[in-house]
Length: 203
Image 1 (cartoon, rainbow, N blue to C red):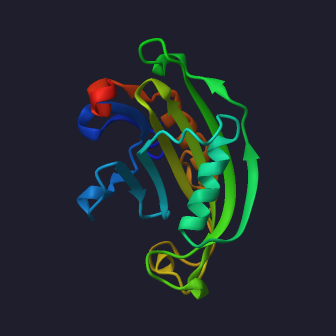
Image 2: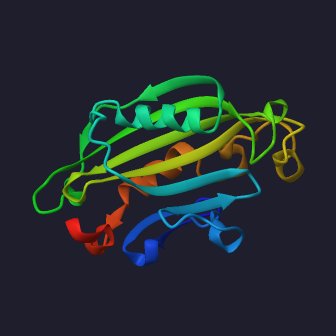
C-alpha cells in the first residue's frame, strides 16, 4: 500500500480521543498555534486539511441538517462567496459514542465555497470543497465537528499557489492517495472517545 493511502491511529486532545487517517497529514500545532478546542492536521503538498473541533452543544440546532448548519456557519465565518450545499446526509445513530445510555448521532454535509487563505483578500480566493461531519455527543453536551478541506481550483494570487501550484487541483486518484471524501469517512468510522473526563463535569 502506498504511503498516500496508509492510515494510522492518531491521539487527539492528549489521547482522550483517537481517530485514524492518512499519515500524510501533519500536526499543524508543530508549525503554528492551534486553539485548545481544535486539533488541526494538514498536507501542505496538496493544501488539504482535516480539523477536529469540540464545541458546546447547540441545543437550538436540530439533529436533522445539523452538519449543513455548521457548514453554512463556517462559510459565514470565513467570509466565503459562492457557497453551495452539494450534499447532506440523514441522521445516523452512533452507538459507540453514547454516554450513560444517552444516544449520540452523526450527520454529514458537503459544500463548495470560495475562500481566501489567512488574511488574504477576496482577489486571492480559492474554490474549495468542504466536508463536515457533526458528531452530537448529547451525553456530554458536546458537538464534535470534523471538517475536511479539499481545494478544487487554486487562485494564482493565493499563497497556496506557491506550494501546490495554481489552477485545477490534481485529483487524489491520480496521485495515488486517499481522496478527502474517504479521509473523512475513515476518520469518522474510527473515531473513539477513550477518556470521557475530557468533557468536564458533565462526564
